[in-house]
Amino acid sequence: MKGKFDTRFKKPKVYSIALLTALLAVLFVALARFDEAPRLKWANAALTLYFAFVIALLAEAFVKQLEYNPYSYNTIIYVGFALFCLFMMVMHLSAALECFSAPGAFSERRMLLTLLNSAKAYMVITSPFLLLFAGALFVSNVSLIRHEGRRFVNILGIILSFLLV
Image (cartoon, rainbow, N blue to C red):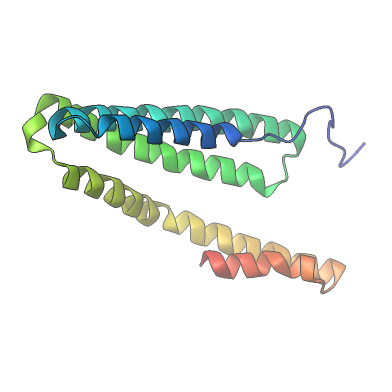
């Protein structure tokens, strides 16, 4: 049958990411009692591991989402967030290696700037793909409106494409 999905699989939940984030916050509170140099070493290492675990959880959710409904926006969200986490993991891995090799040269301010600049660099690198996706979404929803008529549900994709731009 065309258009039917296997409903034995449940829609994936990613609540474990919230639990993992809470554990990371507890670790950061525990690290606050150390001096700056050891704290930064372990904080960068913990962030690297955190992003690696989040990537694994998102990859698992992506596979389950493909089994549940491959045409959902959740498939795009899981891949996009996993790519963002991969980028952040690489940045923090390099910062952690720098912390372990030259602990005195790395400060809390530099760690914060690494986090902020890596997010900004990710946005710059992915913006062409985001614009391409927004354009494709706009065109597909214009086609949908032509075939099914103007309903609010059909216009939501156009609104989303404008919000993405």
